Structures are given as C-alpha cells and as structure tokens.
Length: 442
Image 1 (cartoon, rainbow, N blue to C red):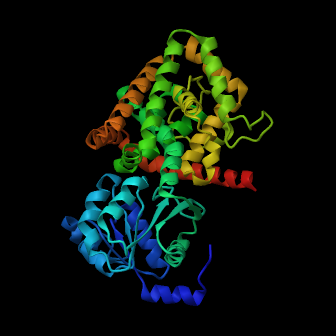
Image 2 (image 1 turned 60 degrees about the vertical axis):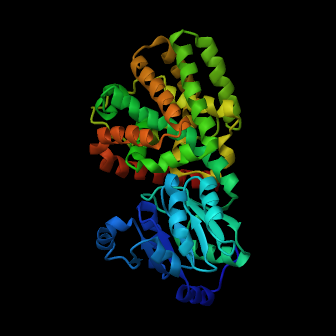
Image 3 (image 1 turned 45 degrees about the vertical axis):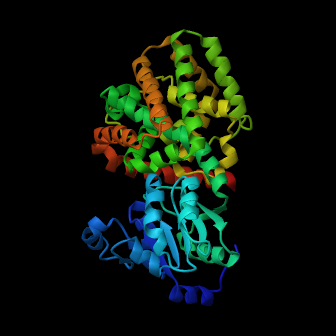
C-alpha cells in the first residue's frame, strides 16, 4: 500500500466527507471508527426512524442526516451498508443524488448484485471501490481481514479509500468482486449451514444443549458457542451471503447431500463404507497435517469455554455428524479451506480448528465412526439435524428471504436468553484462537 504523508492525510480529512447509508451494526461501526479517527462523517438510516436514529447516536462524532439523498449529494466516498437483498432497490433510490466525481462502495457479503446495482444506476464518472470486513460488529477490527475491491476507480481514488479504512487496523486483502464471492462462499456457506442446522435441530428437539449431560466436552462447547453466536446476529447477514451468492447454492446443497448420505450409512450400519469415505475426505483436506503437527485447537483449550450448567461428568462420545459433513462437503466440492485462510473470518477459524482437531486426532475420528454406527444415543438429534440441513438447502436454493427470516428468528427466539453469556464466552474463545493462529503463522 502506498501511503499518504501525515500532512496529505490531514488535508484529506479536512476536504473529504464520508457518507454511510445504513447505520445498522456494521454501518455504525464504520461511522464511529472513521469519525473518531478525525474524518468528517455523515450517515443515515431509514427515514421513518430518523428521530430515533438521531437520538441513538447523539453522543457520537458523526452527523445523522434524514435520508440517503442528503448523504449522497455531499459525500466524496459513500458506503452502502445495507442488506444484500435490498442493495439494488436502495442504490436505485439514492444513487441519482450521488455527488459528481464521488466514489461509491458497499460492504455487503456478496459483491455480484452490489456491483451490478452500481453499474446499472450510477453514471460512468462515479468510481466504485467496495469493501467487506470479514467479521461481525462484536469483534475487534484489528488484524482481521478487510477485502478491498478496486472495481472501477483510479489508483489515486483507491489510495484514498485505503487511507480512510487504515484506521480500522485490519489486514487488507485485494480481490475482484468475482474472487471475493467465490472465496466467501468457499469459507462460509457450508459452515454457516452446519451451525444454522445445529440450532434448528436443538430447537426441534426442544433442548438447550448446555443443560443436557450428553452435550458436555470441548468440541460440544465450540459447537454450542458458534451456533449461538450466529443466531445472536441479524438474519440478513447470513441470508445475504447464501441466497445472493450463486457459488453458495451449490455448496449448501452439497452439505445437505453429505449430511443425508453420511446419516444413511450410519443407520444402515455400513461402518467400513463410512470409514473409507471419511478417510478420503481427511486425506484431501488435511493432507499437510501429520500426527506430530501442533493442531490449532484441542480439548483442553475448548473445555475452558463452556455454557454448561451440568456438573462435570466426563465427555459423552458423539457421532459429530455436523462436523463430519463439513469435511465431506469440502472434499466433494474440491475445496481446501487452508487455501483461503487469508480471507477467513474468526468463526471460520474456529470451524476449521474444530474439524482439524476431530479429523487429525486418530482415536477421536475412530470414536466418531464407532459411535455413529453402534450407539443410538445421538440418533434422534442426528435425524433432526439431517432434516434441518435439508430444509435450509431448500430455503436457500429457492431464494426465499422471508422463509429464511422466519426459520432464523424462530430459532433465535428459542435461544435468546443465553446470547449475552454466549457472546462473552465466544469473544474469549475467538481471542485465544486468534493468538494461536498468529503463533502458528510466525
């Protein structure tokens, strides 16, 4: 990155106005961080909640305006921080008010519809530089991947945007819109489907896993914390990535297929076929890891981050169908997740660490296979999970945002009482894992 001098940056802060259309969690995060760094920032949310938005941010250093027209006409760089499903409608509404010669971008999780909306609505003199912070609003931006997409912009304009976002202290990753969508699908679609399905399965079984003795243990802690962390966020964050990204459709369908086929082998008692299939997947995904390698995670680490109210009584063997199906999906899709580690979200690193630990600890993988076929203790939960995975695949394939929202929010309501505690524990888990990632990379 070619940086501006301190004097040049201060001049830009004096001359340029940054606009944020959409002051949800991520939009507000950007507005706060940019304004605290000395940039002049204006933003807006829905016009019908203007007074509420003004009151909500009255103590912040940025200015809340009535709507996107007011933001667009005075801003030199405008970031659309809106739901992926609504990007076309909102750009069509406010795009015509864009200041002459401005730069626009968005931070949706899928760039194809975002870029198409800009190209279809904005004049050719408007430059396009999009961004995507690969983490949620509750995670520190420092050291996290931040994708920058110079889609239609001069090097000088791109340099200005880089200067602006440098206050986030994130790790810059340079991609095209197409590369971004493929990589985000590869690293997030299957794993989100897994943990969404876990939540629905627990709800369908009417059980809180942290209150149930058989959900005790390090891997169980990770599964519970990740699932609750996903459901504590807003539904559109995950719906946008999976429904608007064509690459994600194939992957979610494969995850449902892998889950169903593995479950079928389990209930048919085909242990040797199940073992052969899982070992092929292991060799493909984790071929670079030997038994002497240090794994990213282990049970001792994961034991520390428990929501369980159950007195300690030892770990209960589990088939871990959800995790087995993740790696089986990667194998069938030809995805090696380590190839995209630079674009990995904190949750993805946990996904990867947990599956790595499960598959690369021989006695643990063998235990899963034995339990999957010979022990019916988790058979009911595995059935509910298989149904849930298939249901999510149908919703996503048909592109039904309303049904996605309904299913997500029903499950969200079921787990609501534990979100505060789960997020606090999850933050500690993420902090520990990121420290181990940095140690491994160094």
